[in-house]
Image 1 (cartoon, helix red, strand yellow):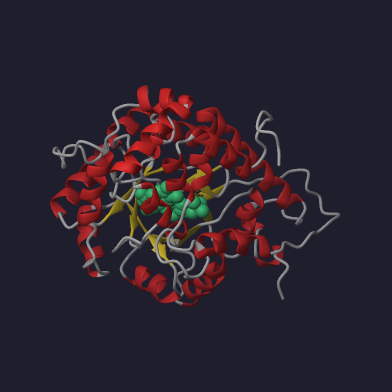
Image 2: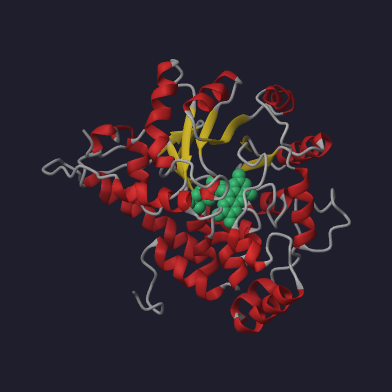
Length: 391
Ligand SMILES: Cc1cc2nc3c(=O)[nH]c(=O)nc-3n(C[C@H](O)[C@H](O)[C@H](O)COP(=O)(O)O)c2cc1C
């Protein structure tokens, strides 16, 4: 176990630092998954089980990790996934994240339920960032939000479809984060502040206001994060179907990416509904525990989309369990054009702020570089199934 005074070298180092820095309920909120967390573990373990093929004696003196995704050139096939409540983990975290992503040459995706609003993030950004949408019962709210996203310069909408109902996260229930804060949990939560003084100063005092930035106008009665969360949970629309994509298309003319696809049938349905791309995702193991890991299903979904002849038109992104540059290479070799990371970026920000996230993104790129060199490929486009050691 590394001593935490040392420079963090890996995502798991940032995780341990975040655990020390954050109040227990907040650390558990980002770290935990649904029910027994089987899928959460599988997301990571199935990456570990997938082996690469070491190749030697190739000229690997020039490696190019860059790629083109949705007409944008990225320094590597990576984006920062939408994370709700990020601004509770580090001061105005979404603003720090968009800046770090721009420096690293990758996209940042802002959550509907972010602490910083679209406008606050846009003011810190110098180019378009992505916006993530949940379908709410109040379609007027959705329309208004998309108008704001357009005005903020967003060109890519990531529409999350795996939250028709909310999966139980036992850690959140135990900590009172599921909107069930009893007197005892309240007392315990208040004791977390003096015992986590760095977080209390950085976020608790300097990081205000603690509202859901994009919702403040819609839910003027909300006084606390718990009030906002209760409103959002009641607003998720379980009646949403592929037909609603037509309506979304009528009010959004930018890129439309469907996030939360985990079966070949749904991947094909997303293409048929007119999506520009999909994110293969199980919400980081936070929704239905017991479903497949995402890396396990990626190549099957890639094959299904290729079979319907849409391989070059549909953008395939995956997320869940990506913890290193090696994992990025494994995901691309399995058929994803890019990955997204969720927990790793918020661990890095919680642990060391923007400088921490800058360093993590440099690390991931360096790891990807080494993985390419030692599997004998020099360009992202050459990362194919041949890089994997599977028969
Ligand atoms: C704390 C937390 C909050 C999240 N909030 C959102 C959200 O607001 N919208 C969304 O589409 N996905 C959300 N996700 C899912 C992530 O976008 C992403 O799919 C997942 O974190 C990827 O798995 P990883 O954490 O193993 O990288 C959240 C995930 C976590 C861990």
